[in-house]
Image 1 (spheres, one colour):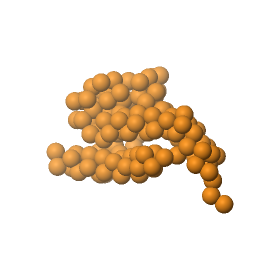
Image 2: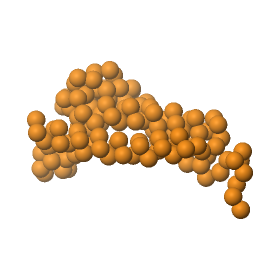
Image 3: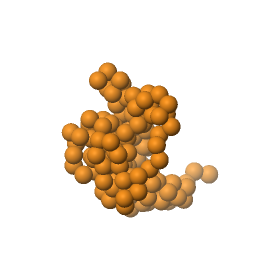
Length: 140
């Protein structure tokens, strides 16, 4: 039997409660981290080396530099972020918008067509942003 429009599907709320912190995590970590063109650190700890970068070079990895680019974008250094990895700006924007969409879903307690459209569009923009940024980096 279909659920009445005024009742929320509990699965939608569980998904929203799962995704909301996951989308806020890069924003909070990016705000707390420090980065330059060569490295990023969180509380002074630098991540391990990218194995694909070591094996084939930075241009071979579509995600190489994404953490640094995201951190720089979170700190308002858009030009430097673009130079490191153009998709860092996309990640910041999509995480912020995605968090707002999931928070709205939790607030109104029902999934709307706007939510569905935003979820689909977010994944498309994310995929296109990563691939597009990689192509930009390849031709530089």
